[in-house]
Length: 357
Image (tube, one colour):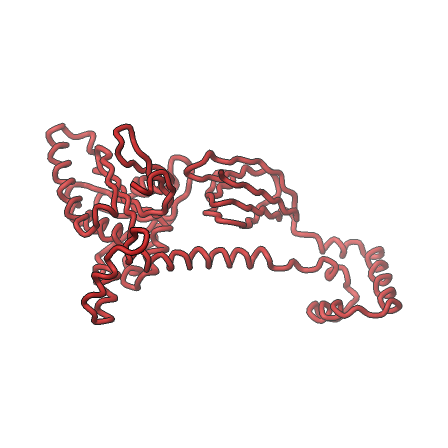
């Protein structure tokens, strides 16, 4: 496979037959045969080149290399068809790497499949749960899809990592994004064009979804950049209690320097007020316990502060921290974890820069 050895962002469906190992061998055989038949029907609409199936013994893990919709509809179909078998399911959208196993077959490793397994472990029999990353992408495709999800809250796995999970209920009215476009445009051949293969061997429907994912990433980066670039208030403003002019007007005056003779007097007056009333000068200091951590991670990494996940960083990102000692972990599924301990003081900004290579 051309993508072998590369890191890709894919949807991963993880399935498990509850209490499979506790059943007699004859019952296990019947359950697995029924499970395989149901999974084959659920994947009929997905081209073989767009999926990789791994047999896990008591279930399966399916990686979808194309549309996130493929994972959505296959998981809903499997949930409904295998409900009587006690199957639970979890879906995640994340980074995976395609590698060759000992038999020369394509295998999947990475955080994308690991998180899918943990999300599945939170589900009850006949329940389908998805991660926050998968929900944020698929819910943006149509209102019909967004109405399927219900927030179930945060769950913590055995590695003390938090996961926001959503349950999926019902079945969407429209089968696929391409079907919706066909109904709106009234052109019968458009569906075949969308589901065909485009440049670089990718399905054209995947090329339609890709800009939505890109917009989500860009929007998050712009919002973070705006927060980091927001200018801090001038500390000397709080040290001028005798000036009756509001803060905005004072800033406008500072942009137009006055003659040297006029600038000297105010500085002496402020100095005198500080000498006479030191208790008001202390008000300009930051609140006790407030500190900031600024991370620059390349190309990407999951940020874990004191054992709690704080999300994915794809560039520069800032966090508010209480003063004191903290343990910072930066995780990337294809590289060793970067761990760094920091000691931050109130009002201090600590900057950590790390590149995975």
